[in-house]
Length: 487
Image (cartoon, rainbow, N blue to C red; front, side, top):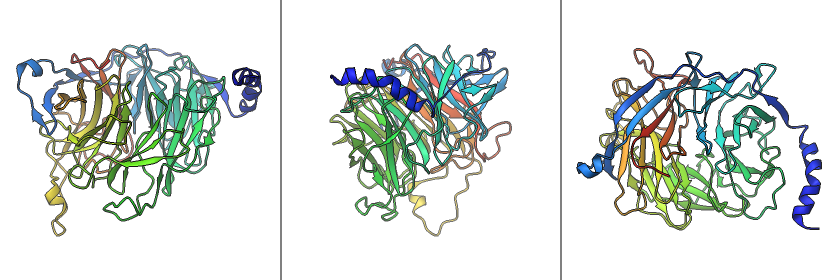
């Protein structure tokens, strides 16, 4: 009997076995659009080369896109978020993880590129199914358009998925594979050697931090069940890492990513150095590769690094260097060898945090981060042991979004702008290294079907702009409109 024939025969039994875990539910409230959300322009993006070198040539500068910001409002109310993620379907439906409180987790949806929004949260009887989240997360499978929303409970995670744009959902209350974990991340991609099941064509990977390691499980049935993969991607204690903090590296990592050939990439600032763990056998084994050496481009600041691949399998890695500025490196051989790091921050920034990136076609990337032009930080000042603590009370931070259509060239052109008006910052005070108040651990970037870059933000600076504190703030998305297309 062929494996395909066997899977078809076993499909009903397999579905019956997991139905006890999965609860089918629907959106109770009808998806009614709010009024047009606030559309604020941060102005023209700046054309620049690596190193923050502004490009003045009219032939290049004239192609700069305009940065825009869209507030996510439902029925006139600006909803809140923290650690936001987002994703597009192939037809342009946009989903965003909204974190109202730790007992109210929502999924926001827009079908007109951020102008209007409705809620597509999994519900039963008018109440949200996923009521608790210490880490909200939404993922859109780029191959199948399946929408995943997964919320951490520490013991495990609630996960719901939808194949009809959030109109109905299936919920798995035990979507982790191993209990007690933190900082979960989810991605999906093609199998390498697994036979798969008739229930889903891709493998779904769930990775987490448990301090002692950075580990992953996988699902062969689209998220109904999760199984161990193999060895951890990173050990929590690593004598070979050679970092500035000794041998203890912890387990905190960036978002997992799956390449077009099924290779799994997990980025991590491992003992204060930029690393990526690479698995070509669905997580059974991992190869750890250091992206850069010591020095300003090699690490020293805490962060949440990001990795992405384009359609040709080129790999892009973004992280914060020891000078707390955003760096980009590229690998053309699947992650074994890396280019010289490029500082891709916008001209004039002095400190950045929470970098994230996405890629589509060869050399076409989009990225995002928070950054400040008036931060008191400097690498030389940081090494001063007897100096007084830096005063961040008047430091303002903005939401930056950037792009390049030729990131693989010897001297790429970048366009970067702020989605907010700089007179109205998104954060005031200290924003990292590491956590940024109100925003917390990460933000997210993606590229829409029309080739425009998009990013998820949180506004932690409202009214008179006090120093931000706590978790969550008004939810925002930003984009670059009118520049070179990335698809």
